[in-house]
Image (cartoon, rainbow, N blue to C red; front, side, top):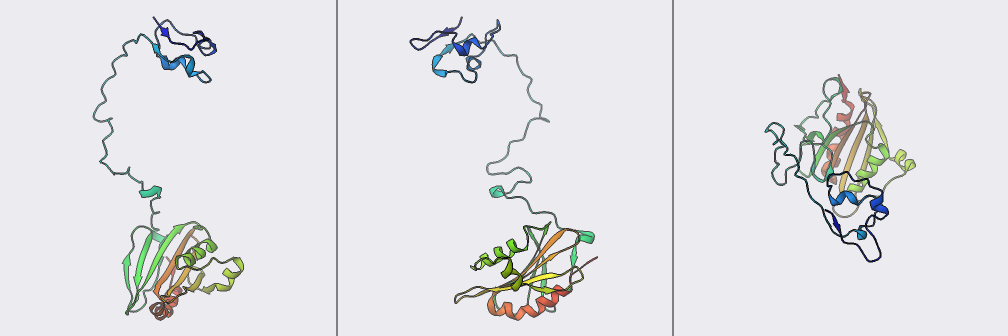
Length: 228
């Protein structure tokens, strides 16, 4: 037996109720409120509930394992970041000759490698490879400039700032920027798009003086880039 509390002036079986053809079996009150129904017409409903059939308990093989607090699903990254792309291997892996006195370490995450020139002072070189155009040359150069507090360039200024270095892997676009202020940061960057469809980034960065000392070896290093 169904009982409905209605507002004054309304009758059960209004426009909302007339749209439904109820089966003989009792149904839940939530199904009575279809799209466009005025929920205020039916405020409470007492419906005889039919016992739901018992569902088989999930097996241990199909039951999902509970994840510890703070854990993330495999392949996910904090803050919605994408995992770094796999590093090129075989013929797609770039090769070079390490400058004399420099040290090299395998990179992690987005880095392909980390190179460190000899001598005192804060200076380091990073190698990063990304698939495709990776946003384009202008966008990457302006991103680098923003890292040391410089204003972005337009296409015309980009062409004036670019220096080209020839390598067996292709031409390398080189840029040299220094921040303003007393504590000056210098950045010498190279950008290379290879025939395999990858874009390689080389960034020598640190205090202005040690970066200036390491730049000649950095330029020679770019000339040695090659693919198997």
